[in-house]
View (cartoon, rainbow, N blue to C red):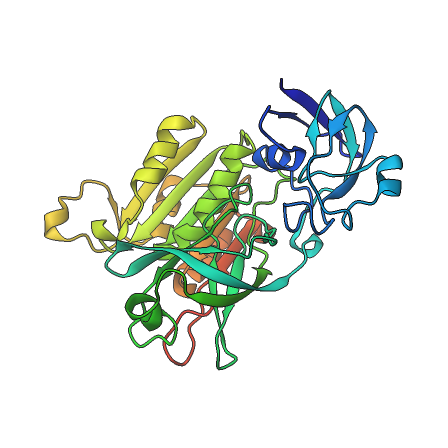
Amino acid sequence: MPYQVTIQPSGHQFIVQDDETILEAALREGFALPYGCRNGACGACKGKVLNGQLDYGAYSANALKEEEKVQGRALFCRAKPLSDLTIEAKEIGAAKDIVVKTLPCRVEKLEKLADDVMLVKIKLPSNERLQFLAGQYIDFQLKDGRARSYSLANPPHDDALLELHIRHVPGGLFTDQVFSSLKERDILRLKGPLGSFFIREDSDKPMIFIAGGTGFAPIKGMLEHAFAAHMDREMVLYWGVRSLKDLYMAGLPQQWQAEHPNFTFIPVLSNPEPGDAWQGRTGFVHEAVLADFADLSGFQVYACGAPVMVDSARDSFVKTRQLPEDEFFADSFVYAADAETVSAA
């Protein structure tokens, strides 16, 4: 039967279903407890049970010693409640609380979402998981010592595979490989999580998300996290692309809009093709926000895309719409000399 778990010292509460571990339920409800391997081998998720009974599950004796169990310790990635519980655990509230790892990974899935956008799903070794905040990114470590950065498109509670949306930049050192020779089961090396682009959950302000092209990737993860955490803040997503074919996952935000009354999706095309028969918004995506909001003083804005879009949004929102500078959060694409994106998505 389901049981209630209370986290101390925060006082946060969540329900653990019959088939869930304490960690799985906490992540599903948006509470970021620390973890590493998620299979009882590393001890990173270890915390204290203050009250209640639990099934410790299967785990490595090196990760949880018998004397620690006597002291009330448990591995929350394996333990399941047998009654209502009160636990003591440190909740992760910022990127600085998360360990950055360098790990091998395997390409699990490749799928073209558009002519120039590839969905890449990667799998870590069975004894590893990557803890991250929704919106952060990873670096692929290339053989020549260079790195290429891509935002994580999946939310933290759904981390069995890491999801990336990679746009093809012709002549790009890494993306040419992704679109021509990369195969499922190929081995890569990553470093992460990195970046400070994530939802500030200590605020109750409504949020405006602005995505340019594959800047949708981290925002997808952020929104899926927000929905899983039952955030009741008003959320609007403006997704700006050139033409209809570039809205490579349009059905997903449309589904979110149907399912969540506090979410609105506004696609914006800068150069629709005649065959698109487009009846929606056109122009630059940040200008659509300017047209819709006369005063942004009570909002937070999260923007991801090309530097010109991010910079234009920041400048115009702060100067003409009273957005506080410290309420604008962004991840800009940066381009290397070989014309390849090296930061974010």
